[in-house]
Image (cartoon, rainbow, N blue to C red):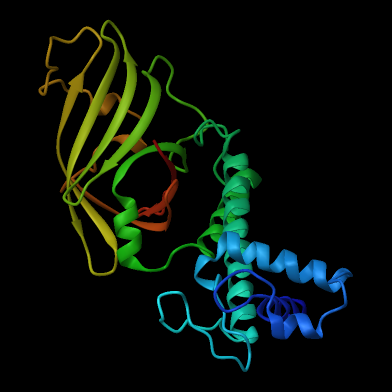
Amino acid sequence: RSLLIAVAMASRAQVCCCSARPCPRAASKAAPHGSGKGAALAAASVGLQRRHHPRLDVAVCSGASASSSSGVEDEGLPEAGRLADAMEEGFNDFESVNKLLNKKIELLNIVAASDRGYAFASGSPERREVEAAVEALSAVGITDDRSKRALTEGTWRLVYSTNFQASQPPGGPKLGQVYQRITETAVDNIVEVDLPVLSTVRLTLSHSLKIGADGKYVITYRGTKAEGGLLPSGGDKGLRVPNLLPEALRPAAGAGSAAFTNIFVDTTMRISRGDRNELRIYVLD
């Protein structure tokens, strides 16, 4: 911090009222030829301010009264302490972003080998490692509900789910990509599967959405639409295929409602916890 203050004071002493010319008052106190490390540091500081902080480009010399060419008195630079605080705040912001990025990369590296969760057995050290990484990431994420809600809207691709078991029933459909599309009023779970005879089919499981005051997303199943493969043009809304999906992707039984909470969300990643404690990790598609 003391170095930042020294740089700020040096730059203030070297910039004149209306231009970047050396200040006469400061020049009279400088070394004879402006040489030495101090002059170089001050010059570098001024150069950085002129490049990155245009509002700090003009300063009033200490103890002098000066005006711009338009006759309007120029505003002075912030005090050295205030400038140092601003610079330090910028460094802190960078550190926060860097910490967040590192934790996201760490989590993605862990789940990359999980085959979306199928390769990690229930209760395994790998699943505990994912839980720990999720907890660490959530601790540095956005907490404002309004911001989280705005960031949640979009189409997200599933990269990990604790509901996917280590083995699938033999002869079942081959699961392709899984997406979740969220708007203000609806949630669609979109699943690509290879079905016998029909080839690759895209199933859209539609749900209405209500968001509670506690930030919980309550979804109610409305129906399934199937498209692609050898289906007729326009798909077939009456195709009864949800039961062919893995249990984790089937519509909720009974009332047809389920709920989840976004425990982490930013511009590229979202992590949700369901009402049956299932953990799902998505990346923005």
